[in-house]
Image 1 (cartoon, helix red, strand yellow):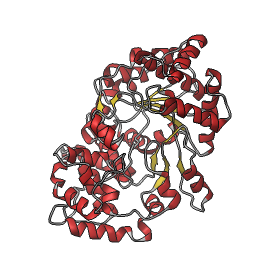
Image 2: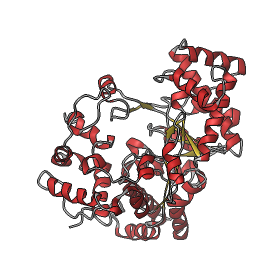
Image 3: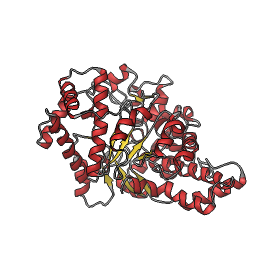
Image 4: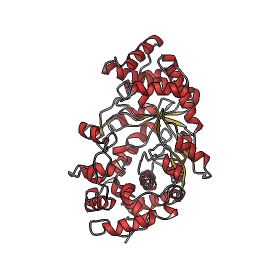
Length: 468
């Protein structure tokens, strides 16, 4: 018995389903463009076998372990490494059994769709995961992982990935990308410039990170001019390894456009650690505008991912570090927040700024109307907590009337879980085809237009926007 219904996520009305199914059949096998994500470039550089099922599916995936933690399962018991190197479960089979015994917790969640897709389509499994089947699953997947066809590069090819972007901090040496480039493999794996650690005065080690950037570039990063020059140099270095985008994960979407003297003074206070929380926020906002200006020069697409309260649990942050599931969406303003940047450079034809949100209330009220008029703005897909069938449907319903389709950028999977990439793209393709089929059935779109749009939403818009 298949784990997945072949018509999942398509409309229930037979006539609309037939239209949507035809659209989906037309695009289901298009190559994957994955322009933003967090897969580890080391996988593709070394092409080593994934170690075991637990470390492939459970330990690295915050979507998985946050649900388990919500039911009083400790991160230590899931093998998540501690910052202090303290004891955690080391037996991958025990971790897998714990996961499998609680698999019912994922019913009707996006994680369930992604996992079942991976089990069925990647590993050829046709029985449900449970406590009773845990060991069979473990042995079957472990046996697969021992084969050459399940190594990272082979999976990359079998997933039909045309291009994928990883994300590295501004001071990363990009050694894994260099190793990929110097290998005889032709997979298109590029980097993306993530400068949060050198633009956020409240980030741990901010001053040290800025000093390191100076050492890497030869510029005096104790001065405002040298600091900006160092950013330009690092962006150029990232472009050498295929970068086509930058990525900015601030708490707010605030931007500023200060005069040179005020910006210099703010930078000096930030570097000395003397700025207030308000001044730190202002500096982050100033740097978003500076990054936009740099994009005018070097052509990198700018991505802004605001609105997440990172690491709400102080205890989990101290013990396990960042990205451990305790990140919570916040209300986010875009109209006032982005006004300084947009008034400075928003009409420049060579600038592309892709906006994401975790605040769905802003789609129809702010984001779609803004993207529907500002030439530089594009809307990123439903993201993170809304990277789900219902979230994707709401996204299309709330943005299309004001922004249309061509001010959006297709889909990106934004994942650390490698095997979920084809699963996530399949969900997006099905939801978009369901939406397009509904538009055809209700007389708002011709069927030939729907086929053209399905191709664009699946492949064309991402490839064009991110310059692959």
